[in-house]
Length: 149
Image (cartoon, rainbow, N blue to C red; front, side, top):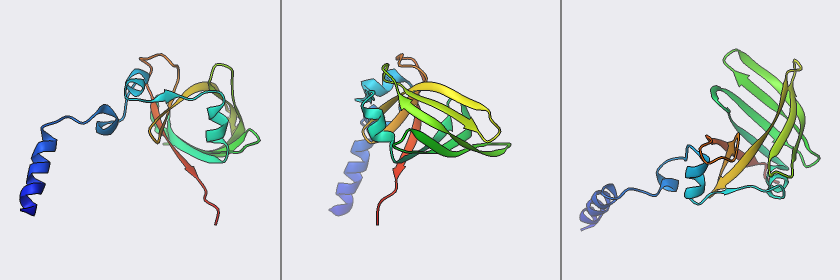
C-alpha cells in the first residue's frame, strides 16, 4: 500500500505544473512581482543589509562574482572575482529616496564601482535589478548572517 501511495503522488505531481515561485527562479522584475515578490523600500534596505554578507554574480556577467560584508555604519568590504583573478573591494553603501540601494565602492586598484540598483524579495530569496521596469532582468543574491555563539 505504501508503494502505491508514493507512486500515485509521483504521477499526480508530474501532471500538474508547479507555481512559478516553486518551479524556477524568476528572470524579470515582472515575473518576480507576479510570483508574489515585493520591492524593498528605503527603510527595508538598511535593515536587511546591515550586518549581512551578500554574494552573487555581477549583473550581466555570470563569470564575475562578488562577496561583500555590509556594516551598519554604511561601509562595505569584500572581494570580487573574475576569470583573471580576484581583487579586494571596499567603500560605502546607502539607500536613497527612490528605494534604491546605492554603492560607492572601489577595487584595490582604484577602479570605481558606483551605481544604484533595486532590490526585491520573493519568499526568503533576494534579487537585484538594474531598474524597476517589469522587463528588467533580476539577479539572485545569497544573503548570510553570522550567528553569535
